Image (cartoon, rainbow, N blue to C red; front, side, top):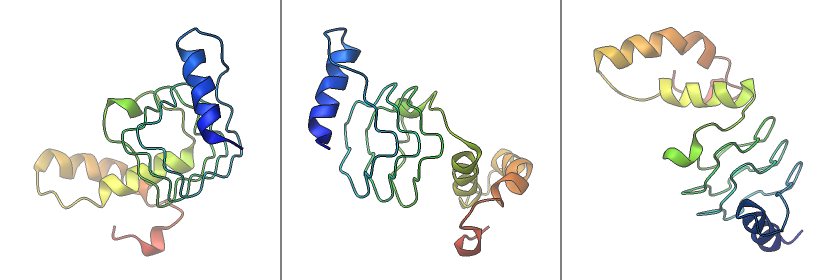
Length: 129
């Protein structure tokens, strides 16, 4: 699989210039350098993104359901809103939120409200909740 060509074709598709939507379903993208990749609306279902670098990747409306994101870098900017995820990924993100060290009263209230959900994280035995 030529990831650079897939991303080039995807960019053309996004721009309405032909190309085709990126279909990376079940793709092995372990440790892939996807920094700055424009993955808007890409199909990443069941993709193996373990240890992938997704810094500054644009994942808006990308389909990440059942993808493996362990040890990857989730972008914390507007490029990660409206991403389609499954419960496993939502639980993982909730666990990371709950593991923050923040003494703010509002944060503590929000943490308490999702802690039960976050404790379903598949790596909870290794996690400081």
